Image (cartoon, rainbow, N blue to C red; front, side):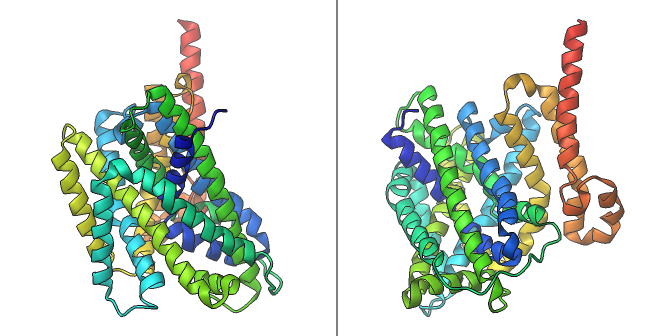
Length: 424
């Protein structure tokens, strides 16, 4: 398998665009709560935060298009509505969360600067990168990602040789499922369909052929996925090692403890740099992807791209005034609604065309929407009303009631289609 310099730049860019606020603060706390069962929670987390996002990149490599192409087999109107919802969620929740995490962990402990001031400066810099997007991928891939990886590798490597109390038992009723659902909060499946388009368009600026683009994106996605696997595994294990010690109830506090444990007094400052880099690159990817989407809707209007970039950064400043936990709480219902649809679209776009006809796309998406509805309404506060329905649906009690119906529908529609062909 031939690897080029551009492949590694793309892989580093993908890793950096994926690896943001949630990817830093969620895994250690997940491992802390899983304790000795950390490897089970890692398996679940890998499914939703590594495998599915990398399949999204592969889907983009096959399509060589935009978000609209991702859902077009359902219908053009559905594709448009889906794209609008995904980008609205992305620009309103994970992008501002990067500013909130940066402020709480990298700025507030050291500088007497208000959240509003930090968010304003932060998103002005994001805007500069977004408006110069032809150079963005090289800058992110060549410089920012290596810095992130080096810092993380040091933290994890040193942390493995520390002295800790014995791990406690997992607090989760279903450890693997808890890992899957916590992976939702990384927004990486959504990130895959968002930044995948950014990478496709960015490679287009380099005059690569579609075949070359597909190879670069696919190989880059695999390398980025291996990087994410290594980092998530290390952070979850470090959190599990800390589970036998003092009680910790805050995600960001645990991450700060781990950095001090591994790097001593300088650890908090190293963490501040790491948080800033990881959050910034993700914010750039989200705003760029959203601007690309709107640009495509308005006949490739550069003005539409620029206006969306400015408005997205303004929204980031406004929403960035919320603290991290508030943004995570707001995100749960949105994720329960859009994540199942996103996952099935990613899988369908990764399968061979003969298994994913228009009828298959429509049937699987409809089944997913219907059977994920109870989880969505429960997350809005109607858990008692939805309890009976969730208990009736297989895996409904662990918020995965849509999974089996989607798989069964995929198989059933393909069998039906094949049987019709044989009888005609």
